[in-house]
Length: 76
View 1 (spheres, rainbow, N blue to C red):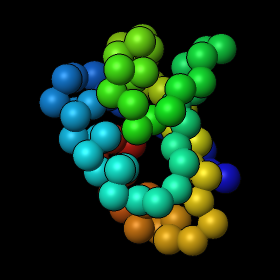
View 2 (cartoon, rainbow, N blue to C red):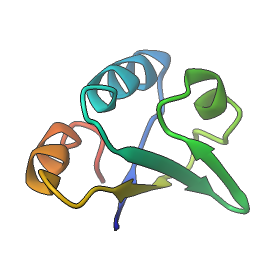
View 3 (spheres, rainbow, N blue to C red):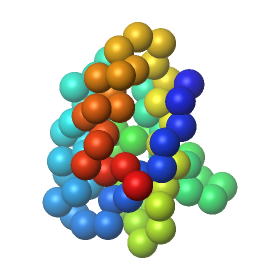
View 4 (cartoon, helix red, strand yellow):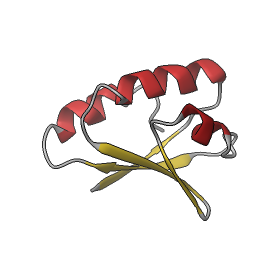
């Protein structure tokens, strides 16, 4: 598992983020405070406080470099 900090401070960013990560066949969790939600769930993402950076846990064994590359627009 790898953890990166991301920022999803607009509706368009959330939509493109979900579209980008659904291309990968691995699990992603967003962690904000005590809440952990599935990062592929748009409704779940909007339940978080998007004004602050969010931790993204990437549960991938293979292709981690391509996942990290796809996340560049969202990383801090």
